[in-house]
Image 1: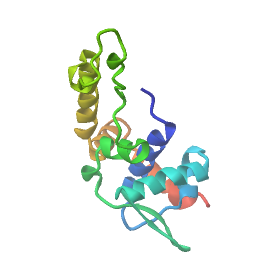
Image 2 (image 1 turned 60 degrees about the vertical axis):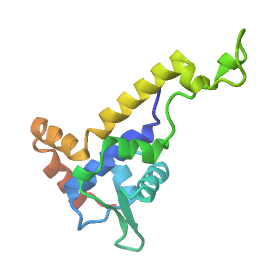
Image 3 (image 1 turned 45 degrees about the vertical axis):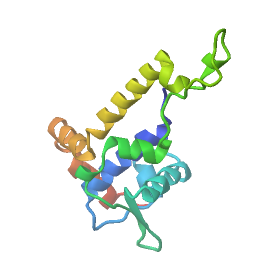
Image 4 (image 1 turned 180 degrees about the vertical axis):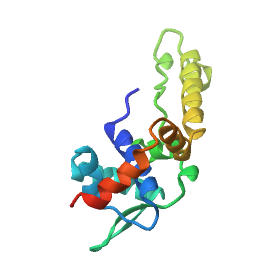
Length: 161
C-alpha cells in the first residue's frame, strides 16, 4: 500500500500549527513555503483536514488554517482517513465465485482466507495509527530535536509571505 504524499504534508503541517499555537492562523501558501511544496496542492490537503474537523479555516487578510483540536486529540489515523478516505487498503472482489467449484451464493468476504488475513492486517495497521496522536509525535520530535519548535516559530515570524 502506498499513501499519497499529501498525508506526509498534512502531518507535518499539523505539527507546525501545533508549535505556532491556536491564536495564529497560517495560510496554505506560508505552510507550503516552509517545505517548498506546491501551495495549491497543499491547500487541497488542508481543506480535507478542515472538512474532517482537524483544522479550521478562516478567510480574509488575517485568515488561514488553525488546529481545530489539541494535538493529543488528533491521531495519525484521523489524518490518514481525512486525506486518503476511510476505505480499507485491500478490497476483496470475491473472485473465488468465478473459480472452479465457486458458489455464486457464498459470501467469500467471510470465507476467503486471503480476505480474512488482509482484513486483520488492515485492522492492525489502523489500530497502530489510531494509537498514536500528533502530541506523541510532537513529544518524540522535541526530545530528539529540542530546538525545532522555536526554530519553526521563528521562521513563521520572520519569513515574509
